[in-house]
Amino acid sequence: MHRSTAQPYIYSLLRTFSRLIAVTFYRLRCEGREHWPATGGGLVCSNHQSFFDPPLVGMTCPRQMSYLTRETLFKVPILRQVMTFLDAYPIDREGSGLSGLRETLNRLRDGELVLIFPEGTRTYDGELGPLKPGFCAVARRSRVPLIPVGMDGAYQAWPRTSPLPLPGKLAVVIGRPITADEIEGLSDEALLAELDSRMRACHLEARRIREGCYVDPLLLAGLK
Image (tube, rainbow, N blue to C red; front, side, top):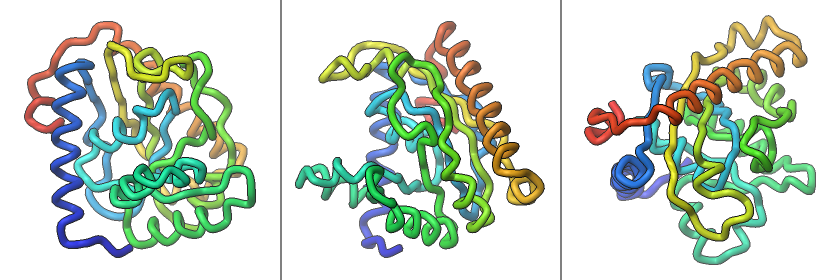
């Protein structure tokens, strides 16, 4: 994947700025950062609560991340340029989605982290919905780990019914990855159940953290 010379630096600056905003105004807490792989590709699988979610997951990761995004958002001219610059790319959820899946495989094989939302859409009630099985084939073909992520508070901070963000608290938990070897030994049904279990555990832990939330000084130092 081609990036301009300046792009990684701008991405890093925006990530740092976003962290400061999230910690200052939303008392963001994050646990499980040791589970982010230091190198190599990985399919990051998070629950989906609001429009906050892509930058929220991205700002907790020390590496640059790619974002699989619904195609309709790329029809807004300025937003399209911004998302493309920040390594988002479209998938047609109404059609076959083959081009988006092909690009996902390419990025994973190039050693990138790619964020997806296996629920397919934002939650209507703040809870984790049923996962769609499309990630199974991608994980098997790319032979990368699945990294479960659970967040809480984003639904309250920016629900579907609100055109703008609201005050709130945010928490993100990164779980232990499902390795490529583990994936190979599981059927699609078992893999779906395993990822669902780990994502739910992360979500519940994020909810527990958020309900007793405090400002962690380490987050101000860059979520290390």
